[in-house]
Image (cartoon, rainbow, N blue to C red):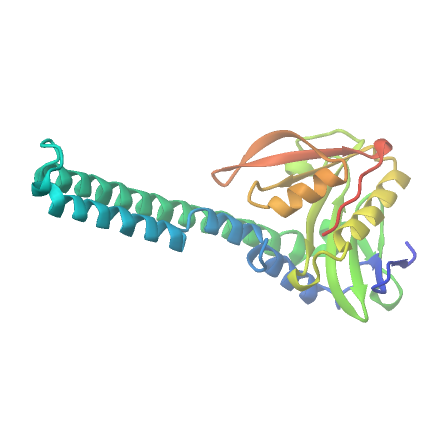
Length: 268
């Protein structure tokens, strides 16, 4: 595939260069997962992290109960006794501790989930890009796909900004799916400091063009519900959720796009 100039930023998309790109690709994969405002790991952690407003609300409730306890002799309803107030305080304290324990447990599970995701990527596809994506090394290290598979990199001024891979039909889920018209999109990632430049859309366009040329009619991928920016991006390109499957204790979305329908517009 020829280098493809795209956009005012001087970004272009090319095939993976071996071995020069490997360290950059692995770093971006980790950074895009763990860092940046919209990273899926941080989104998941923040979902179960108490905000300052939460603690302020708890403090306000406690102060109100204490004030009620002090004011009780001054004419409050007789059923609001000091004992009732203390019971309410105990209940609120119990619920607070229970929620904090639950939140800690969920954050731990999310951490384990993303640790497994990173380990799978770093010891799998991104440990041997040539083998996994069926590439051969050409001139100047630029790789050439041997078939439907491929691995595309976005570059600007010599810096790798993002990437995506495609595996040939029938290779997903350890070979369990044998549909020759469905290709699998793998490991789309953009460096956090270069997101919102349309880089993901550019590499996905290169991937889709290659897939069509090799007779692939449908693309499929998996993504976590915590990866909210990715879900919005894919939906903007015309992808749809067709199901869910279990992955390390969590349900993840299975998405598809029919190439003959084209795609929408989104930026990532």
